[in-house]
Image 1 (tube, helix red, strand yellow):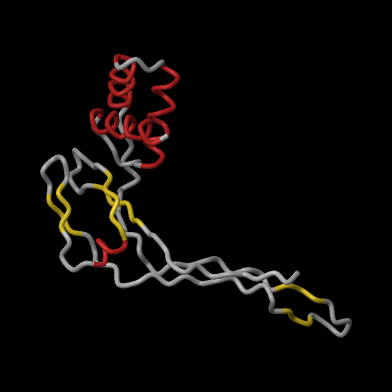
Image 2 (spheres, rainbow, N blue to C red):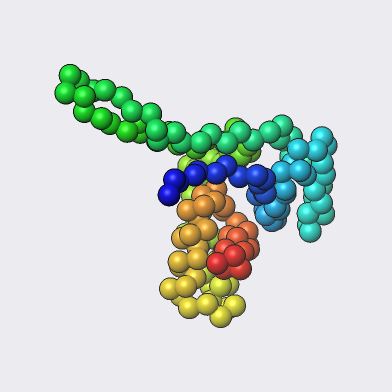
Length: 155
Protein backbone atom coordinates (compact mmCIF):
# COMPACT_ATOMS: atom_id res chain seq x y z
CA UNK A 1 0.00 0.00 0.00
CA UNK A 2 1.40 3.39 -0.99
CA UNK A 3 1.53 6.11 1.65
CA UNK A 4 0.00 9.40 0.59
CA UNK A 5 0.83 12.58 2.47
CA UNK A 6 -2.07 14.98 2.14
CA UNK A 7 -2.08 18.72 2.56
CA UNK A 8 -5.00 20.37 4.36
CA UNK A 9 -7.95 21.55 2.30
CA UNK A 10 -8.70 24.39 4.68
CA UNK A 11 -7.46 25.79 7.97
CA UNK A 12 -8.82 27.57 11.00
CA UNK A 13 -6.34 29.95 12.61
CA UNK A 14 -6.86 32.13 15.66
CA UNK A 15 -4.59 34.70 17.29
CA UNK A 16 -4.44 35.73 20.93
CA UNK A 17 -4.12 39.43 21.75
CA UNK A 18 -4.00 41.02 25.20
CA UNK A 19 -5.90 44.17 26.04
CA UNK A 20 -3.38 47.03 25.95
CA UNK A 21 -4.80 48.47 29.19
CA UNK A 22 -2.10 47.51 31.72
CA UNK A 23 -4.62 47.18 34.53
CA UNK A 24 -6.73 44.75 32.47
CA UNK A 25 -4.64 42.64 30.05
CA UNK A 26 -7.69 40.50 29.21
CA UNK A 27 -6.94 38.05 26.38
CA UNK A 28 -8.93 38.31 23.15
CA UNK A 29 -8.94 35.57 20.48
CA UNK A 30 -9.38 36.82 16.91
CA UNK A 31 -9.86 34.63 13.88
CA UNK A 32 -7.62 35.03 10.84
CA UNK A 33 -10.55 36.65 9.05
CA UNK A 34 -10.98 39.25 11.82
CA UNK A 35 -7.24 39.94 12.06
CA UNK A 36 -7.10 40.37 8.26
CA UNK A 37 -9.75 43.10 8.19
CA UNK A 38 -8.50 46.66 7.90
CA UNK A 39 -9.21 48.71 11.05
CA UNK A 40 -10.98 45.84 12.84
CA UNK A 41 -11.85 47.09 16.34
CA UNK A 42 -11.93 45.06 19.55
CA UNK A 43 -13.91 46.29 22.55
CA UNK A 44 -12.63 44.89 25.84
CA UNK A 45 -14.74 44.29 28.93
CA UNK A 46 -12.82 47.12 30.63
CA UNK A 47 -14.06 49.54 27.94
CA UNK A 48 -10.79 49.84 26.04
CA UNK A 49 -11.17 49.89 22.25
CA UNK A 50 -8.14 48.81 20.22
CA UNK A 51 -7.09 47.59 16.77
CA UNK A 52 -4.52 44.97 15.90
CA UNK A 53 -1.88 45.02 13.21
CA UNK A 54 -3.55 43.75 10.04
CA UNK A 55 -2.41 40.28 8.94
CA UNK A 56 -2.10 39.88 5.19
CA UNK A 57 -1.57 36.13 4.88
CA UNK A 58 -0.05 33.07 6.49
CA UNK A 59 2.39 30.86 4.68
CA UNK A 60 2.75 27.22 5.68
CA UNK A 61 6.03 25.52 4.77
CA UNK A 62 5.98 21.75 4.50
CA UNK A 63 8.88 19.48 5.38
CA UNK A 64 10.35 17.55 2.46
CA UNK A 65 11.89 14.31 3.75
CA UNK A 66 12.47 12.83 0.30
CA UNK A 67 15.63 14.78 -0.51
CA UNK A 68 18.70 12.51 -0.25
CA UNK A 69 22.33 13.72 -0.36
CA UNK A 70 25.53 11.82 -1.15
CA UNK A 71 28.07 12.42 1.61
CA UNK A 72 31.13 10.71 0.14
CA UNK A 73 32.29 8.10 -2.37
CA UNK A 74 30.66 5.31 -0.40
CA UNK A 75 27.30 6.86 -1.19
CA UNK A 76 26.10 7.02 2.40
CA UNK A 77 22.63 8.34 2.43
CA UNK A 78 21.50 10.99 4.79
CA UNK A 79 17.97 12.29 4.97
CA UNK A 80 17.77 16.06 4.80
CA UNK A 81 17.19 17.53 8.25
CA UNK A 82 13.62 18.75 8.45
CA UNK A 83 13.28 22.50 8.36
CA UNK A 84 11.09 24.05 11.03
CA UNK A 85 7.60 24.99 9.94
CA UNK A 86 7.54 28.73 9.68
CA UNK A 87 4.55 30.98 9.59
CA UNK A 88 4.84 34.49 8.27
CA UNK A 89 5.44 36.98 11.03
CA UNK A 90 2.01 36.98 12.53
CA UNK A 91 2.64 37.31 16.23
CA UNK A 92 2.51 40.88 17.49
CA UNK A 93 5.62 41.97 19.29
CA UNK A 94 4.91 42.98 22.87
CA UNK A 95 7.94 44.57 24.45
CA UNK A 96 8.16 44.03 28.17
CA UNK A 97 10.97 45.34 30.31
CA UNK A 98 11.98 42.05 31.89
CA UNK A 99 14.44 43.81 34.19
CA UNK A 100 11.47 44.95 36.26
CA UNK A 101 10.73 42.35 38.89
CA UNK A 102 7.79 42.63 41.22
CA UNK A 103 8.63 43.69 44.75
CA UNK A 104 8.42 41.14 47.54
CA UNK A 105 5.52 43.19 48.94
CA UNK A 106 3.61 42.77 45.65
CA UNK A 107 4.13 39.01 45.63
CA UNK A 108 3.17 38.72 49.32
CA UNK A 109 -0.03 40.72 48.80
CA UNK A 110 -0.93 38.57 45.78
CA UNK A 111 -0.32 35.33 47.75
CA UNK A 112 -2.45 36.60 50.64
CA UNK A 113 -5.29 37.57 48.32
CA UNK A 114 -5.19 34.20 46.53
CA UNK A 115 -5.18 32.48 49.95
CA UNK A 116 -8.21 34.57 50.89
CA UNK A 117 -9.92 33.26 47.72
CA UNK A 118 -9.39 29.69 48.98
CA UNK A 119 -6.11 28.63 47.37
CA UNK A 120 -3.46 26.98 49.52
CA UNK A 121 -0.14 28.78 50.00
CA UNK A 122 1.57 26.26 47.69
CA UNK A 123 -1.10 26.71 45.00
CA UNK A 124 -0.84 30.50 45.27
CA UNK A 125 2.95 30.37 44.95
CA UNK A 126 2.76 28.10 41.90
CA UNK A 127 0.13 30.29 40.26
CA UNK A 128 2.16 33.45 40.85
CA UNK A 129 5.37 31.80 39.66
CA UNK A 130 3.70 30.65 36.43
CA UNK A 131 2.12 34.05 35.88
CA UNK A 132 5.43 35.87 36.38
CA UNK A 133 7.20 33.48 34.02
CA UNK A 134 4.71 34.40 31.28
CA UNK A 135 4.35 38.09 32.23
CA UNK A 136 7.56 39.18 34.00
CA UNK A 137 6.82 42.91 34.03
CA UNK A 138 3.81 42.84 36.40
CA UNK A 139 4.39 44.93 39.52
CA UNK A 140 0.80 45.42 40.67
CA UNK A 141 -0.54 42.72 42.98
CA UNK A 142 -4.12 43.06 41.68
CA UNK A 143 -2.99 42.56 38.08
CA UNK A 144 -0.84 39.64 39.25
CA UNK A 145 -3.85 38.01 40.94
CA UNK A 146 -6.06 38.67 37.90
CA UNK A 147 -3.55 36.99 35.57
CA UNK A 148 -3.09 34.10 38.02
CA UNK A 149 -6.83 33.48 38.17
CA UNK A 150 -7.07 33.66 34.41
CA UNK A 151 -4.38 30.95 34.11
CA UNK A 152 -6.41 28.71 36.44
CA UNK A 153 -9.49 29.33 34.32
CA UNK A 154 -7.63 28.18 31.18
CA UNK A 155 -6.01 25.08 32.72
